[in-house]
Length: 611
Image (cartoon, rainbow, N blue to C red; front, side, top):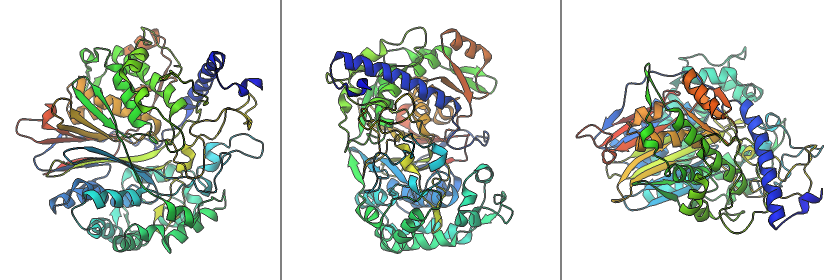
């Protein structure tokens, strides 16, 4: 065990790089077999790119998009529309997000980008051994996901309240009306919601969830059933009238805490003091220059902004624009070299992600070094003609890290929405309850998150037998009281590098795949000159520093053979992105005379609409 005591020097650095590679290989083995965060429900027909002159919204469900558009028509801001859409998503897309979860939001006010952090926090009573069993080994994900132990302090309402205070135009209470009406009168259950409910192995175990989502025989509510949620309507009325305080204080807070702490599988540690103490934060956005554009994203505790900045900064050293996708039937297929370059750049970014990124309030993060041009140029030189398989983390600054890499493969159920208002102000917001249907604890008409499982289950480097020594080097993303777990959510805004004009708002759900989904769309929009819908609909691909992952059924045998010949280990799987994007005329991808175009992912049920 002497190797765990090493803390500095070149020998230590070499040892830890070796450990990184070994642990990354373990991540790869797990990632190859993990299920999508939300199951696939097939490709939906796409009407083509949507256009608008005045304002536009894009959301993962038509009911939410219609609510956001109505708010814009009533004179609301992009922030107002985002709040209305989130409340409706709580009702109609409960598997993905809601007021029991957290969110990251980017806002453009015409002058500056602001990044708002509404990520959940660990309870004050939590320790780094939260997910360590009595045998000293990390508990299995499936053992704790559907339990009170996984629930973090929800942040959605606090962050929305904060951003509304700064950028809202309509009254807070007015933004809840569409969701309250829909919860009271009911909405027809979609095929996707029905299928996900039918497949879920845990939600039936929660009495309140079973009563609402299933019939007496335990079957999911049928497609087309008008599902009413009077409990949620009552909850939303209280929040509409009393502000976010109504959620974070009794009686709602008391019911949430009771549900978490009385969970029969694994009682959680959440307290009313945790809810009372929760604060949303504003953080400095992560922005990087990419060719003639400026790409801005969310900083830690999300890894999305830094990882995407790294990938784009690395790709800037290659002429990927010359590798535009070619038609394959009714589809577009990227060139093998494009898939090679993108997946190799992502390997490098994911290696750094696992080593360095966590909640910046607990772990010092040198963001400037991680996205510095010189550092990314050195990383780009590591990409050759053959795949590196598993990349090692780099050393962005002179100080050697005494951290261990995170080997936990997060799985996140998430939603993304975009809005631009009549003033040209924009929102990109990614919101989540973590796994599909979160912790499966249903209280007062909404589901609670299981975001704490986004922490590393092993807080320190495990020994070969799986036990976690107390004196082993710590993982940056380990559980600590009040800490926010690392995320991959990546709300993104794109600007013209010279004029500063806002050109695009986009993002996606999809767990750690979010980074690949957004990168693919950015390359499609910026390098391959596709419109919003074409870029979103491109086949999904990438690497999380293990196999090269390709969306099932979307790639030719010839492309797979070409990548295999370059040393790529290929895994085909359903990759359930849920991309939304709004693109401005300044990017040159819109028809003449049109101000905004939008697209939504055919893999889910979202829409982009506007006036």
